[in-house]
Amino acid sequence: MPIRILDPTVPPDRAEAGLAPRLPALDGKVLGLLANGKVNADRLLDLVREGLEARYRVREVVTLAKPSASRVAEPEVLRQLAARCDAVVTAIGD
Image (cartoon, rainbow, N blue to C red; front, side, top):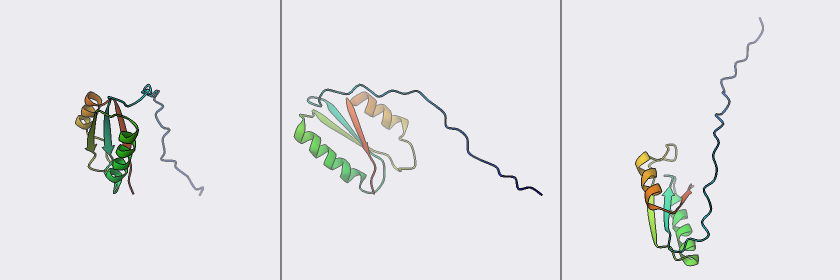
């Protein structure tokens, strides 16, 4: 009797997406920081914040976090970031 091998994978969906235009600088801009819920993500973003604030005159920083790295950000979190921020940095921890 021959062995039958099944492949449970499916090809990925190919979605066309482009990058947002790069800001020339962060002076006077609102920066969003999104921690992904892993250990030390917030600490990494604190360092990013310090570095960017030392280099640019950031007007405001909005800090939000996902409850878990294994879940996507809630729509309300994404809405807040899109509505309030000129640029957003997200980080993983560990």
